[in-house]
Image (cartoon, rainbow, N blue to C red):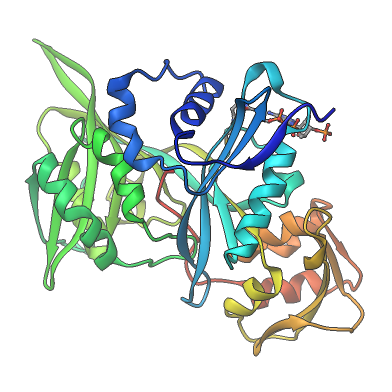
Length: 400
Ligand SMILES: CC(C)(COP(=O)(O)OP(=O)(O)OC[C@H]1O[C@@H](n2cnc3c(N)ncnc32)[C@H](O)[C@@H]1OP(=O)(O)O)[C@@H](O)C(=O)NCCC(=O)NCCS
């Protein structure tokens, strides 16, 4: 049933599309005050709209950014930062049509990857997105968390005001750099969309031997200030450091703040080396592990050519991409790089599974065991593991 049209949004339609998105996510209606705060981060540019009887019924938004891939290259990428369909128009193919339009637009812009945070894991696989990174939520007990003598000491930490944070953090984030595969540049538009949140957050900056090199943004939660129980929890939403010493320094700071009974940190890298720094490793409790970033290889040849590979025997992979068929075909990957080939395939997989392997989050052997990869040569999954292995776990660390 095609009783709707899908097209790029034009100037003047952005507030109505923001309303559609908000309603689809069960947010309160958009009054003038809320729109005032959000409009700078929500321009008409890069919005795909769906319209029925000239009324907006769906939106898919993206922001242009760049992402680090294994080996350190940074490639043009799209952060898909808002997708919703009005509840009375779902399951009629509106999202499918918007995804087609959006991916065509990203291809035309020369963006190699697209990424999003998914509300549900069942939505985006059909459009070629796979779980590119995972992250963990942790709960840390300051009372139990004593650092070992061998743990990095860290530097100085200072608290800054929200107006200083708005000024300082974009440059500091740039200086910290995209250290892990999956990290993205934060465009000014991203920072604009965060300004209204800053006033609810406490921000601290870490200074190392070369100057400011890390920051943390957190929010006090569950405040109980009635004797004899005086305690509070801290919810950490953003913690970035240029190196392990800066990350450790920020954690040391959080864990020695008075009256804090628990530090809850969300979306941390799976290989954050904090637990082994502690005398009592159980002070660091993992409360959840979940998918963090869903990644789509928009341009498979360019994406495969951009990342690096370890030493090992080359593998030929047949990629199936029904949604963007130009990507389908056989690719040879080896220590010298990757490109199309006429050789016979040794592994066969869908493009969403390639996205799971691409940043180094999953192993080919695991996905073959799960039935997601067809091994046409018995040792090919192991060889692919060897080539695709990355020294650090991929992680994005940016919500959008
Ligand atoms: C998720 C959402 C955008 C889907 O839009 P939609 O227009 O209903 O999607 P489509 O009709 O194009 O669905 C395409 C396919 O995906 C499936 N699908 C869509 N949403 C799904 C969901 N939430 N769970 C499982 N399957 C889903 C459909 O059943 C359909 O399958 P089919 O091709 O086998 O028939 C819409 O339901 C929505 O706005 N949800 C609330 C907000 C939200 O979660 N947004 C996503 C934020 S990341």
